[in-house]
Image (cartoon, rainbow, N blue to C red):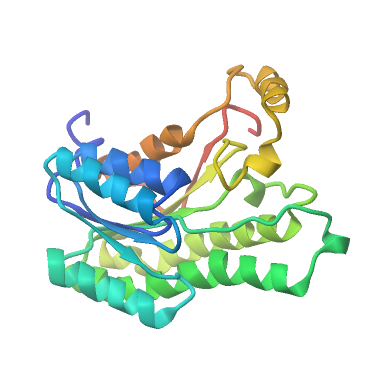
Length: 254
């Protein structure tokens, strides 16, 4: 088992939102384990290029491609460039996401639509475009970024919580549909791990210290904890795992 978990040699991973947060950490982790990378970003060009340089330093190949996951034409071009460059897509990581924090009663339709368009439609679009290639090859790994909020929504992030609940249920349904084609579909459910996107939700340094003191493990996680779990789901060690949400939260919710 040890040589199956974490070995991505010869694999190609397409990661959305790869210029920051969990996407950036996952890209760096995958490259260290032998994967070539297709790094999608919308605005975080510097972060995506940093991952590409780290991959190249590890002896891997990487391309960074700008594109909004809501734009079907841009995502079709991303998939086509991935196939033209590497000839295959073995792993798709749907990481791109947005979160608006505030009371629902004060929220706007524009805020709802942005979160739904990015978190839901962005994930659906790129997955539908990549799936025919995986189905033809009868192999693939799809890893969706959900959240522990998919299990128990939180106040002031009501719409975000709902989008992650959708991702969790859709992961289960898609796993049943494409499993016969040799494709595993799982999702990750991070807890309140500080990233640049979640900083307004995880609070100040003092608030984070108090949050950590309430966890069974007595410390907060970081994006690399999520990347390590993504590595397991991307590797051959997860061959018999599909339709699951792996919760990465230090025990805050069990």
